[in-house]
Length: 169
Image 1 (cartoon, helix red, strand yellow):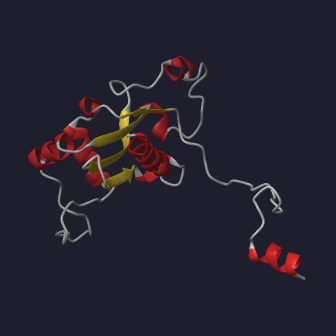
Image 2 (cartoon, one colour):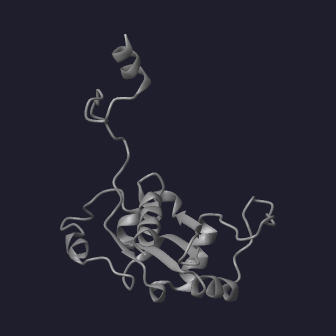
Image 3 (cartoon, one colour):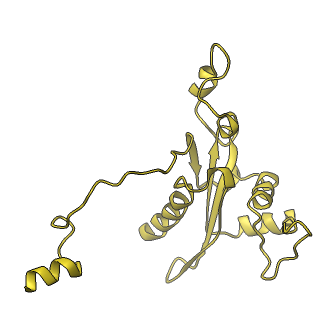
């Protein structure tokens, strides 16, 4: 009886648990480029991402009649990024963000798909930053992903990259 109680209580190691394969309905993200270089972040593109995600930096944001927050001031955004201990930005090929299929036209878009995504040819689709004293604490701020790509693991990837950086320092 003690063994049965342990099984149902979840006290067995994960190797002994009955693990059924999970069917994922999550769509895969398009090819991405993840960067921790703050120079890859264009403040204008970042402000656009803030607006697209309806993300405000104010404690009590002012909303317009449509429910949208006011845009972030560029100067404050530049200061915030430059004073962050770590910045993670995610870029995707802009052509793949809005296409409904992998092929367009007779020849398809295969040539453009072969070109790797970089911060210079990609669109900023995700962002996150952290501030730390590099001794005791670190705080994660402003994690956001373009709404059309949410639910595909990009936000989790950003947070994991931030945590991994501070685990190794």
